[in-house]
Length: 479
Ligand SMILES: [Zn+2]
Image (cartoon, rainbow, N blue to C red):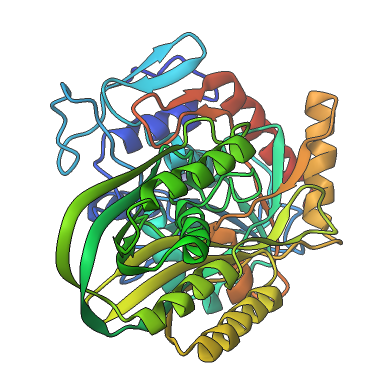
């Protein structure tokens, strides 16, 4: 213990080291939650732990701040557990082996969990202090953020009085995050019938595309492998007769698929030559953005097989080509922000249906709802059944945010320049809180971290001190 004893701010790193000694991977929240309750008891602070192991600790305003609005300070208790092959740490029962390396804190062989242990440590240092000036504080420590914002989703926000919230779950101190996307999963099921066909079986495969995160990379020109396959099949319709046995690609709704496979029965012995000619044209067209694209058309010989009824083939290709996909709308408030998008992440053929699984996102609730409505309309015209699930609310951008202004001003005093005000097209707990707390004024910030969710995760010591100082000055000026 006490590997971080000489670091400043001392209390922040003392708590961070304690947190690192307690196993707290997502889904393993008991011990860390108890630690928070013990901390509160030790400091005579009122605290509540709920069924999801979320902990809320209340601290009264310091002298002179009795009339100031309550501030919520928030971070998540769980960490992503990753380790190197030669690492013996058991995340269920062992703490981490942390060390310092220059300006960074790291963990030997594992993720560090500074995402988001450092937020919890900073907030505890504020709760424990007797000389930091601040309004009444509601410290909200949520569980299982990394596996779908689960704790935040189960937390009852009714007991929270605060209407200003500082979420400390960002990893770039230069950025002030002010909005995030909400989203949902949307599944279209196209019913199919099968019939016995004879002919040459050919497997087409699209591989080597870049893929990527459907929130972060949706506007970066990445080609969706399933849609590329649909384009190839659409062309094939014009050159010969064929039947589709199956078409599959992608395994996550929120990832742009990097490969897709179609199994066909073709009735033209020049098919492979003709299809390769066409794909060469596509290759040329997308070479600057998808240089790794590989296409194969392989004959598996003559066969007799259950293929999708030919009358449904064109409908399937139509659904793939004409359902919306990609960027739907850019924001007119925040430059460069994708406001609404969707990604056909999974395409899967079963015996009796083809499943198209989209991940929908929008930084505006009403736009997300409209996108769902639009897909519903499309689905009913194509004759698909639908299933929606995994809904999470957006954190909408607020033009007028006193907390944003205060943070920017205190940040500027410290660093001599303003932070970059940004919105992200992915989910954050702030979305859950802003949908549950009417009128919430919220910001998301944090100290410098690199390579979170990997064994190279590291936390900057100097940046932690700087951002902590800005937070203290924000609290001091929250009157
Ligand atoms: Zn996090």
